[in-house]
Image (cartoon, rainbow, N blue to C red; front, side, top):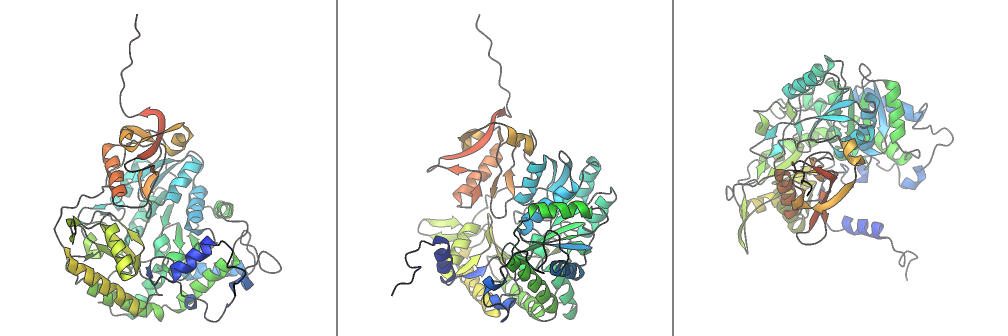
Length: 520
């Protein structure tokens, strides 16, 4: 007998149910890995029972005085901040609120170029003048390292009028910048430091559990930025901790930031109908993680140590770690982030030996071994491990990697990689470029034109070019390579085979065109 839902079209629900039964294992966010018991053991059988609104004594997120204030105060106590804010709109709203709280329209802000797109959206909305710092570039791995304190010192000296510095730490690949040194540099100029620590919500608990383990096991133990001098830190609880997608938190110190302005902008960017289910998830997550510092977190860290040693024994696939960044100025590396590089590796196919890309490795892992990665880089893949991962999960990933490793040939190719280590030439600020009329042109004809869009691969969302910057030959080559490797690129419009278009500012070119003389 058919149920009443059999004839209903529910593509989202049906797609989710099918996805969750396909048998793949999630080495990606959210950090709960679809396991309800990690936070709510026997507490909430029906989530609809706690999906309510601001009624009775349930308090209000936009002006908390009761239970929500108590929960946020508790979070501040756990993380060591002066004040913490629950974010139901993800880290995106926290980043935008942080920038808005320290900048007025038209101000200058110094930002790391590998910033999330929410940073660029805030720059656009506020009409800010962006000064970019390039993170250090690791030539051997073709990926970003951290932000150098020397680069920060130079930028602050050249732009002392800037209202803030914003950096990403850790990076998507797990590299941690020297927050302590950077904070001291910017504070000399009375400038606040904002840290996008979206991928580091677990640092608070890792940096404490390590004390219960022998010193030889954990040399790389990142400490949270809010404890190292940062003024505003935004963390995505759902990325590396067992919280629902969209759950995030913002921490602040009051020395260089107006609490009143931050209150206003956190409220401005949050929904007026905040989810109490999300807030309950955040509270439960923080309490559970604080309680589990020497319990499940200890077991998790031991698992990470055990399996990193095994992954390091692979012959052709390289496990990225702190040693890869020793000659750079990064302060630490997050060992829970599993990054596997296949740079210069080849694989035998029907068409002969072909270079292995990150996208190719991701597809093999997913389709042949049921291991779903978080991200495919140009020549590497990223897996997120969390407290919710079991020994069996680590073992299944190891077996897949060992099998694939035997099929690869190292140094089979000199990798033709994308380069992000130089900044494009800027013709105008983002705000100004987005006000101009735009036209759509074929990608190959965009050389010398001013982009009117953000063009980036997502994830991680680091732009090839932002509005107002010149489309150079190297940038177009990078975009073309990303398209050919099947990566998820935004800002390019594909209208058929080899028919790719981009939007550029009308009549703005980076070339000199001679004026034609009038005929007499």
